[in-house]
Picture 1: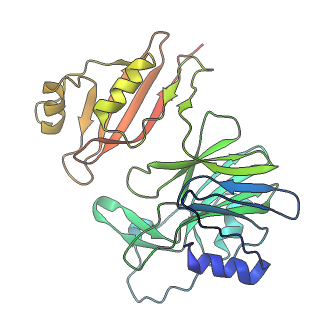
Picture 2 (picture 1 turned 120 degrees about the horizontal axis):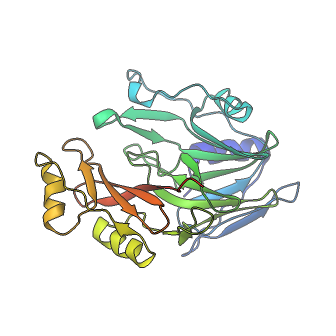
Length: 287
């Protein structure tokens, strides 16, 4: 099922119905201007629309969740989302395109975290809403897997992420003004003009991720962990020499450093006791 609060609002405003359920979810519709939308990621749906529904009313007397406070939106698109009662997570612009991640309600978690409900992503072109992306219906005691978004080094491609500590990637959005496709995370992301490719390591444990990285030319750095950093020292003892540091509390974030011939460097972040990769970032050598 789709996010009922949001989907009902969309139907009431635009009269659009485009929900199809199958063993492997695939829905496709065409907007009035010809935009083709589709999703091949189970649990994520996309609808072409030029009208944003208002945020569902929050029937709660709970205190404000300070951990969920966000900076005021900076783009016109983000501000238009905010005026409908939504809380904007982030705004990513590229050319005429602006992608806005937003949610209706946040609840405080440990270590300064925020858990969101009714997380969605809006696609704008030249300031006009084109489509909305949303996840399966959430229950009163669960949270959205969607809401955050970031850029990638792939052409016309944005990364859809959880707004959960670590902001793990859940899918890619490919949008070029004519089509908007929600697809699994790309198997490879090029950095440094294609000379430093990074394979899809999201969700892998660090030992599996390092094998994949080594296969693509990334060399684990040799970092001697601080003796007081027990988790990092344990990894050192198991042959994972590239661990830079680990947090001893909260969500247990760890950082790992890699390099490659030519001077590119890569930092990988994991979360939890099983060292699951949640993010990475590469730096290219200065020309």
